[in-house]
Length: 251
Image (cartoon, rainbow, N blue to C red):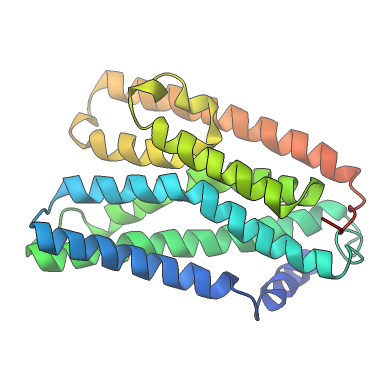
């Protein structure tokens, strides 16, 4: 445990002089400000703008995570992977430390984005659409849907390059937006890049259906599929990482 905590501290210190911390601060603030300005100018309040805002966050997450993971792995490229992953007695701790720090930053950014917009929307409209706890639940849904993306993009950056990761991020961004339409019905559960956006849409659209048996069964089935796929992704990447020895840094 001490080695793992030391790895987390090392990751935090390693990113001090990069764009990663400012990115996690500026994007939530700018995103909330732009949407609040739109609501103010159009006079649209209530659940509609909140739903659109949450879906935009969900759609943007794959591309943003690809940038964040690329920025982090670039730090390892500078040292030619001399410390990562060989600097730990158990190599999985190095990957787990990275995921913990990056996902933790993502969680804080998502919570900030949702709370800033929710609070600002309530102040503009004169009444609050949801309670703070409901906003946190929405943020949790957005974050949990993004967890497999950190695994995928760390793998792509470690195995290939940041160009591959960012191209995949763009493709996932487009697929996530496309699957918000009827084209994603019945299929989105099998594409992790769509989990955040569709999860937010499902959460907000199901407000009046929470007592419905059909709604409850649908949530349980969807959650089961997502958990199964997440475990499968973790297992595949974990086995691959066990034999990982770094890569050439000439790309």
